[in-house]
Length: 177
Image (cartoon, rainbow, N blue to C red; front, side):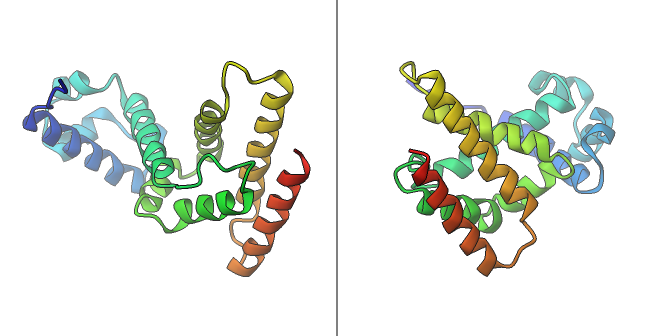
């Protein structure tokens, strides 16, 4: 039977997370302090530490949960190699048009490498299995890294050129098979 989380715990975690995101809008991650989060959330520091080890732990949990939500809302998450065009289109939509895009921007502001690593780790876990050969692992890593790096470099392009880029990447992924 699934345990229900106490409503007080849910409210406290929500307050902590909202306070953290509010601070992150204005400050880089390394400048956010537990004391400031607690003041904004109207809790004491011991309450914070009952839920999270430190600010980094809070950020990591939020990042993982948010990316999990993004990918669970992506119908083609498993179609990277079978339908790469659809996968890339949905990936772009998830990270630019979704409800979560603002929170992603806040959490990963100035931290592209962390963003890339989280996405890469999530998708590698998704595509890897016990039967994945070293060559398949390298191919998956190469494709994911290329997609993310290219997307990062060209993120300011117009939507028309992004459509063309998606098609080029999809064609390349199909040729790699």
